Figure 1 (cartoon, one colour):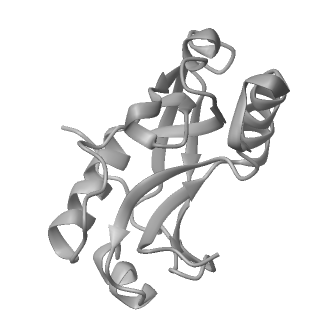
Figure 2 (cartoon, rainbow, N blue to C red):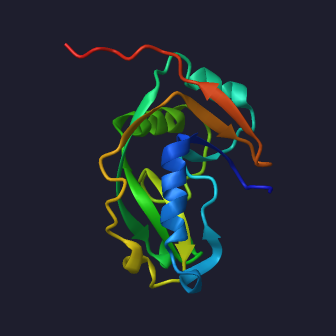
Length: 172
């Protein structure tokens, strides 16, 4: 699948990914929009990258430690933001992802396609107006996971793993 831009994302560990797919299976088929349920749960770090060279991203992320993400409740982006119906998502809290997003944005040419960075894992695309019905599920809320690599996604859809091997700085 050809994309307009390259991106970076973190793929969720298998248990959390399966849990998000299960949330998607709980969405009534009649409520689904054309893009349907997410089959590859992930959290985008930076979309809109102009480069198709994983080496440039690897250099920006050199010495970065693994990232922690905490999953929250489900919520949604209204159809007017996505153009594909409402986007049902699991909110994500992660100072680490916000830092990497800012670092990539500052170092690499990009086009911002969405206002502000709101880390999330998409569950499914539903018809406009149906997102509210699926918001507020706390099944995964509070679950924290550590992720040890960022995936660079080329414009052609292929992915290259970039390990996060740095040491976390201790406070104090």
